[in-house]
Length: 142
Image 1: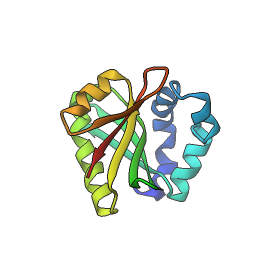
Image 2: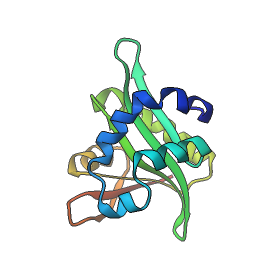
Image 3: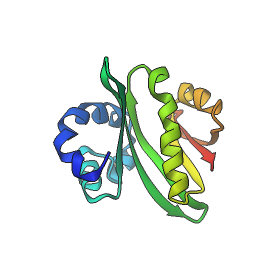
Image 4: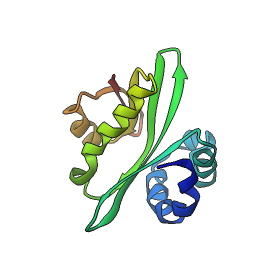
């Protein structure tokens, strides 16, 4: 979604993002994983808002991305994913992957519970680390 469209639709996506934030750790919240900070970063263009849906149900999922330069390379991070009926929108991750390649990223990176990791493994994602609470950092080389 273009940055100039975010303010007009944030009210709709805010509850979906809030659900995803419910599992954030204290450290993640301290590092800007809260609704006001995410909205600000979407508005300044340092983060991007992605949506997926269909004509019958409308928008069923939302993702937030950002590009991060690290010692390991340029990473297209997907810190927030929320939505219903994963099977109907998971293929849209390919669009984010294409965007990451265009932006010269070396990896896609996200995090999730065991079920997420199991599904994404079929698409070439690997587990990098596992937190004490069972959430796994996952990555796909591009």
